Image (tube, rainbow, N blue to C red):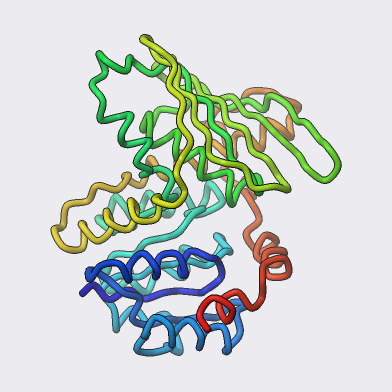
Length: 317
């Protein structure tokens, strides 16, 4: 049984992951460290329902007692710091989406990966059956990809990164530039569209919707046809987790390499800068080294007051 150490109980993911893990006998959360907004009652309810062995006083203590770390804080600015105790102990660590939010943190992750550190991530949508199923079809049958269009709802970055990672899952690396296309507003809801150019001539367009959940819709135009699919969100967590557990059991890593994960972040950073510059196309290579990125602290503060503060008590009672 793989023993997982959980860092922070912020989002719905630990709950959903635990439910999936209960269906099998491969892995469990065995210990938790929490320094975020969930209170002791929430932590206790989660620990009782899923039989966690201990609540740790530090991430270092947590890393000492498990096989792998799962960093699941909603504040992506803390992800690297929270991952380091596992890395320092030569233990793999999974970092939930968005893996980080700035170019500086992307650079640090890439440097760690080059040193041989095992950092796994990030969006489950990248590994969805619909994405892998399309890629598993012979290219002569499905055609060579020319353009991808994808949609995501809820917010710009925290949720929008899902569809950018799905695009990355379909095409791999090679994004060159991003341009902000435009915005639509109706009341308190905002819809924005971005255009991505890749180095082999392939293009992609993604739309983020703020203020409402939207399905992950993907349209792939190829040299042979146009393919459309909606991601089944009821299955995506299992696809991600099984790859992580496969790695832990076999040493074979079928998750995306770090430079693909960080390219998704860079695409969104370039898109944000393009919007700020009035739609001028921005090359990924020209993102300023001191670009502030997306503000994880601000997101976490807002998330803490807008999410259900008793979600784990209500679902683990």
